[in-house]
Length: 111
Image (tube, rainbow, N blue to C red; front, side, top):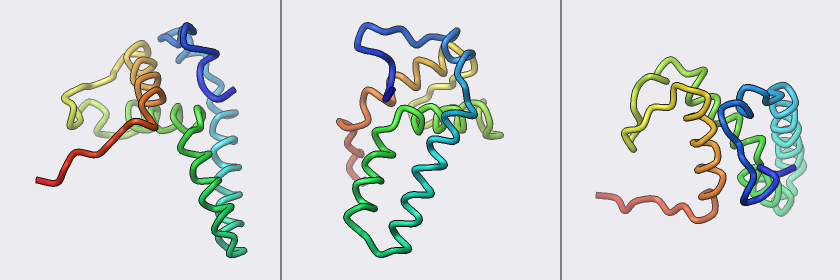
């Protein structure tokens, strides 16, 4: 499963609390290992494809949001968007928003 089941699916605070973190961390670890092996073998096309796969991965999104909102010591500090996600519901909303906008995101112009 690469993300919630569909556009109408609900990923809320209860779902965040029920996530099998070990499974998602293992998926991301396997992908990183495959990237490492492809780089070491010099297969740059495979590296690029695996990097794209990681960027689209729901597991990677969940692990990334968890790292920023739960594990980091600066988790209570607002980011550049001024938002802080301290509850399970807020973390689930951040994960959904990040995963939904992963391909349409464009960085702001340099000042």
